[in-house]
Image (tube, rainbow, N blue to C red; front, side, top):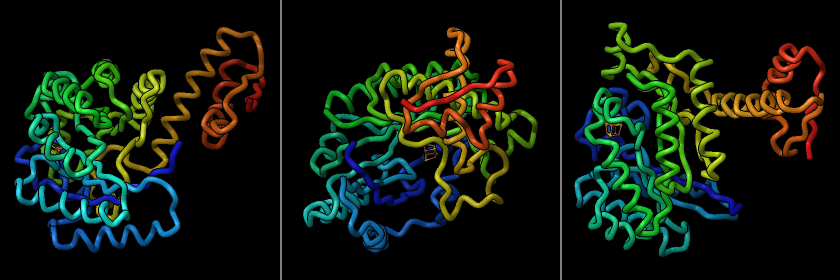
Length: 319
Ligand code: SF4
C-alpha cells in the first residue's frame, strides 16, 4: 500500500451551528480560536517534519464541519490548499464534515479543489440515538450523503462512535454494517469520550449517562472493527488522537489512551483464536506474521487468557 501522510489543519466548530451532546471541538482540536491566517504557517511546519517522506501527502481539514463553514472562509481555505497542490508540495485534500452538509453543489466545489477524500461524521445509524445525542440529522441523511459521495467518485471514510448516550452494542453493529453497505472505503471508530463543558458531562453527572467500562469499550470496538475488516473496509483510526489540547483534565470519563486501538485489535484476534480452538483439536494456530503481536496481546494477555480457558499450552506461529 502506498505510504500516506496527512498535514492536519484543525478547523474547530466554526462551521457548525449544532451542539452534539458529546462535542467540545475546542478541546478536541486543542485550540481556543481559529485563525485562518495561521494556516499557511501550520502547513509549512507540518511539511517540514515530512522532509524526505516519499508517498502521498494530503492536507486534511479536520475538526469541525468543513463544508458548513461560511462559504467565503471555506473557499479561502481551499484556495490555500490548492496553492500547495499547484506547487507540488501535497497531492490532494481530505476533509471531514457532517452528512447534512453534503449536496451536489458542495461536491462540485470540492472536485474543483482536488478534494479526493471525504470523511463523514455518521456516528450512529439509529434515529433514536442520533436524536438523543442532538445530532440534528437522521440516518437517511447519512445514507443519502454516502451515496452521493460515492456516485461522484470521492473516497469515503465513515466515522462512527461506540458508547454513545443511549446506544446499544447492537446499534453499533448496525451502524458499521450500514457504513459497509453504503460503500465506504475506510472507517474510523471513536469510542465516546466525555469532555468537560459538554451536555454529555451533565448527563453523566446526573447519572443519566453511564460510560462503558474499559473492557466494554474494547469489546464494542472489537465487534465493529471485525465487521469492517471482514468487508475489506480499512479502519484508519481507532480512538481520538492525543493532541496537545486533549489533556486528562478535560476528560471526565471514557478512554482516549493511545493504546486503545492496540487493545481493540488484540481483542479481535482473541475472538478469532477462541473460534479457531473451539473448532480445531490442536494446540497451534498459524497467523499472519505481521500480526503476531496482536494475537499474542499486550504482556501476552491473550495467550495467558486462552491457556487458562483451554487448560493447555498454545502456540501462535507466523505463516
Ligand atoms: S457536528 Fe461535529 S463539530 Fe458540530 S457539534 Fe456535532 S460533533 Fe461538534
